[in-house]
Image 1 (cartoon, rainbow, N blue to C red):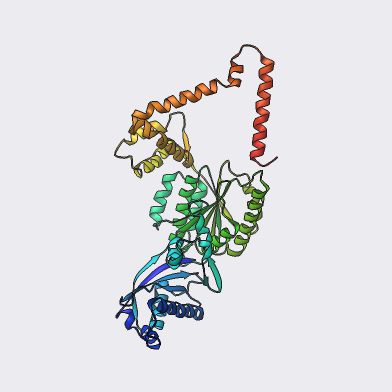
Image 2 (image 1 turned 90 degrees about the vertical axis):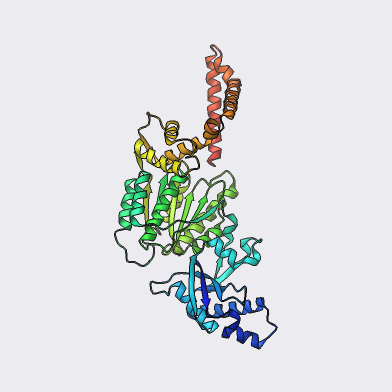
Amino acid sequence: MLFYEVTLKFDRNLRSTPFIQHIMQDDQRFNLAGIAEKVDYYFEDYAKKHHGYYLKAMLEELKASTLSFMCCYKYRSPKDIPVADYVAVAAESIFGCEGKVTAVRELSTKEFYCRNFDDYSNRSASYNCLQYDDKDVCFSYLDNEGKAYKEERYPEATKEAIYHELMGIMPHNTLKEEMERIFDKDYGVYFGMPTHYKIVVGSREAARRIVKLLVQALKCNHRILSTRTSYTCIDREYTIAPDELEYLVANNYGVPTVIELGEPISKSSRLRNDFHNLKEALLQAVREYSQNSLFIFVEIVGKQKQSHVVFRELEPYLNLVEIKEGVGTKEDAERLLRKLYDASAYTSYFDFDYVKQQCFTDKVAAYDISTVYNLWEDFLGTVLQDKLFPAYKHLVHVKLEQEEASAAASPYAKLKSMVGLSKVKETAQKIIAAFAVQRKREHLGLD
């Protein structure tokens, strides 16, 4: 599903167009809201007759000569009329005079929703949907934006720029091979999704970096319709609801949906049922939309408790290309770290040599993307006290010393420091180990 704002300029003000003149001639008491409602009715009827775009005219001033339209569109074939041409023809047919397209802007889902339902901006998105192609287009998942769901639109890039960026993230051979397949053939038009992806990485930031390059490459080669990308998670902390997942994928017709599979299993039977319902909703979405909605699954190493269950059931419906996180030398890692440093707000306060000194050691010869990101995050966590505001540095060390002293004062620490008592120490160690195993079993939902 694609969302646009298209602006037309007429050779007269809207009040002077034949259509508005006709409405006001029939009923002089028509106010602006009544005229806007009439305009919406005619555009809705036009879309039904021509199987085209959903259009809503943003009629705010009859004395104006420009008019913007909110457009919602599901791609059908390469022969579809471009959005600007469709809006111009529809407007001329209804208003009775020609309008010139002055601007076409792709919208995010949130922008389109807020402009379409501006009277309901303070209400939950669950209350509002629109009719398109005899189906409801629902937006309830927007209520979880920033928690279980995030959307962004990546800038489009050339093949040369994509490859330049690719070599800066220490790509695994699986990623380089997929880039070659993507750029192998460009028909100049979109046909559908021949494949989907499974990305295995050590951190979410590494996944986002790979997703961005994949999406840019696919858009550059007309394999998707937009770089608008939705990222959602199925994990303990924030999990999208099953019906919201279905709405999200349905609205991402022609664009990517990234699904990170985390750790949804819990001792709670309710959460287990939630995971089962989510899995069923995902399978239904895959069966219904996989031909025209791109699925990118993300596995974070160490958080793969239930992903094998999902992939086992997805295999009959999806052709998945697996992409792994690459490994590079220390020099490769330094180049990636330099990009993070250059994009930060700290370049004026300390040089890159200081950052390298804090992040890297001579003992490590190879790095992956996740490690570099983690090193950078750790550095940012200490740089305020260590470099920018050193007057607070001693407070951090005092806290650490207190924690160490507290640990040393624990009953088990005192027991270990005693001479002899080997049998007692051995028994205590077994009790602690058994307790740790039990806690782990509860964490995995095994008890």
